[in-house]
Length: 441
Image 1 (cartoon, rainbow, N blue to C red):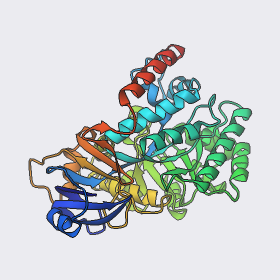
Image 2 (tube, helix red, strand yellow):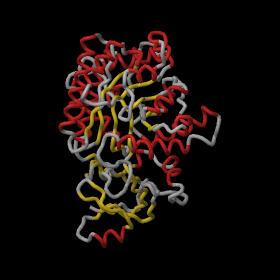
Image 3 (cartoon, rainbow, N blue to C red):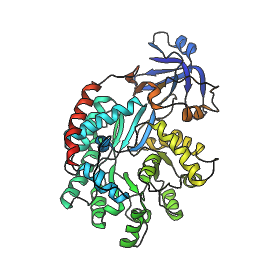
C-alpha cells in the first residue's frame, strides 16, 4: 500500500520533509519513503491511497494517561476539591472504587476511540480500580485488540484500600507482564508494573513488590513528586526524598517511567539521569491540579529523557503540546523556552521511550519502522518545510484535523470513521453506565 500525494513529515534522523511525498507500507512495516510519483513507478502493483494534499506524519504518542477516568467528563462531584489530596480522595479514588470490569473495558474503548480520532497510535496507561482489580488489565487489552491500537498497561499498586486488595494489585501486574512476555499480540501490547506514588506505598509493600518482580521484569510506572505532599511524606516517614527512596528500592532504571517530577530537586534529577529513568510531563493536569510546574527545561538541559503525556486531561497530544510550550515560558518568565523542549518531548523522547519496550522504531516515518501513520487535513497558510514543520504542528494543527489513522499498517480510522467498532453503540453504553455511576459519587 502506498500512501501519498501529501506533505510528508518523517521526523527521521535527517529531519526529511517531502513536499509531494509518499510512504510505501508492506504488511505492518514502512518499506520506503520518497516522492509520490517515484514510489508509484517503483511499486506499480501496489494499492495507492491519494491523500489529496493532506499532511502525512508519524502517529502521535501519549506516554502517560488514565483510562479509568473516562466517566469523569461532565460529572459533578459534591465533595470538596480544595487541594491535591482532596482531588485524589474525593474525585479520582472515589470514582475508581465504583468501576466494574464492564466499566473498565468501556472506559478503555472510549479512551482509545478518542485517542485514535486525535491521531494517537500508541498510549501508555496507568490503571486503577480497587474493586475490579483481577482481570482489569486483560479487559483493557481486549479493548486495545478490538480497536487495533498499540498500548502499554499497568495497574497502580497502593496501600489505600487495604492489604488484601494490595496483594491483588501486585498479582494483576505480574500476571499481565508475564502474559505479554508470552504473547504481546505481535508487539502491540506491553506490560509495566504500576505503582501509585511513594506516599501511598509502605516499605512493607515495596518489599513485596520487589520480591514479586524478581526474575520477571525491571520496568515500573509510578507518579513521582506530583504534589509537594509526596515529598513531605517521604521525608517525614523515611528521612529521604521520593526519588532517593525509589532508588534504594531498585525501582528506577531504563525501563521505568517516573511521571510528573514537579517537586524534585537537583540531586533527584541527577539520580534519574544516572539510572537512565524516563520522566513524563503532563502540563494540563499539573495546572488543573494546581500542583506546580516541573523543571522540564532544566531536566532536558541535563540530559534526562523527558516525554509528554496527558494524565487523561485530554486525549489530544496536539493540545498537550500547546500547553507544554506556554507553561514553561510562563513559569520561567522566559519567552525563549518551551518551544524546543516541547518538540524534544513529543517527537524525540516519546519515540525513545517506546523503543525501550517495542521491537521497532515508532514515532518516525522511516524504512524499517512500524507503520503507525496519520494524515492531517491541514493546509498551511504560510510555507511549511523541514525547518518549520513543528511550528505548524504546534500552532496550526489539532487532533480533530486528523483524517486517517493507520496503526501497524492497517487503517483504524479512515476519513474520520473508526472502522473496527460501532462508535455510536460504544458511546451509548458509556453514557448509560456513567448515568449509574454518577449518583454514587
